[in-house]
Image (cartoon, rainbow, N blue to C red; front, side, top):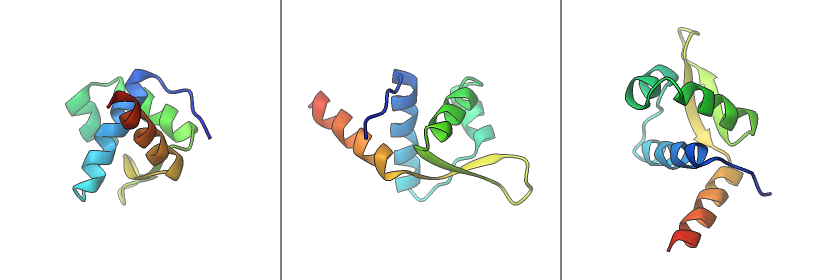
Length: 84
């Protein structure tokens, strides 16, 4: 399945993949602090496209990224292949 992704979405997916690979589950507030408030919109867009798995922290107020969908992983692989 092919997704129409913006460069912002592609960059954030790549960043999230790296963080998840390091064993981290970044939350929305951390990402907004590191990458700016606009990241919240991009996270929601990726979640709406079902490219990332978001959930709430136990406190129930902040979204945390739990994983990338197989489609997101495939898209990142295709993007990497195209840039090599």
